Picture 1 (cartoon, rainbow, N blue to C red):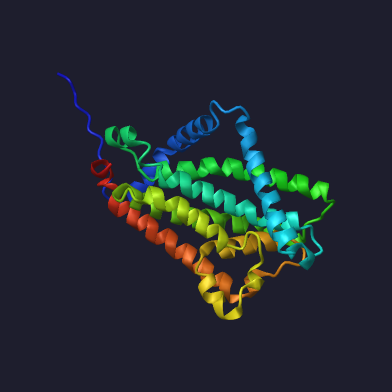
Picture 2: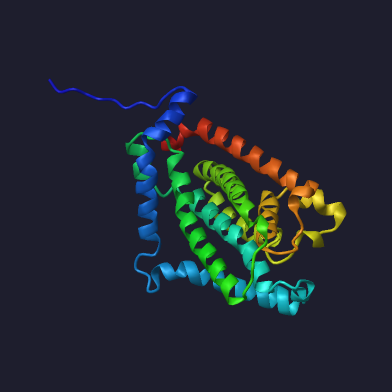
Length: 275
């Protein structure tokens, strides 16, 4: 007599997180698949991970540094100041774009097999971290080119990398969940990323924002992340840990992460039907 095996989703929160660990190999499988697909059939391949941040840095250096004359405000090469802001932003924007569409691009996987759906958007974020590491290597090369020695607080950079992950996962899961139910978000996400670039301190310093606008400006969780990266990399950059706007951004990032995970978990059972 043929035996029928049924795989059911765990009901308790404890079992759900245990399932994530049991399916941990899926993180590797999906991430590796995305890495191979991303640059497949491209002439330059993985070199695009080098060209994109470099070209963006050059454009920002010309526009903000030469045209807006911001390069005269610091003794540190303006290219390094820009790249210190681009480093977290490019990871965030790429991960946000990839994770927001991750569920809708894996319809067959979601409708046929049970596993914690959280694995799909998170694995796409992990994939983007490879580009982040490549960009970090470019930053180290720029140190050599400019004969630049970073400040000692670069040792604190892992803390801000962790904060970057928290911010990205929170934003990514939120948009991923909404994109499953409301397909309009596939058109909204590129606009959000483009708009976010101009309200984040990538090409400029947060100190240029008027004091009366700092609290509203800091509602953008990437403000604290980018300011933290710049403080760790650029000599003489303001310490965000001594300023209240950083803690506004930190609170928003943590709140967004917890609320997005909660929203994702509530909607997860209906993903197969909605997709």
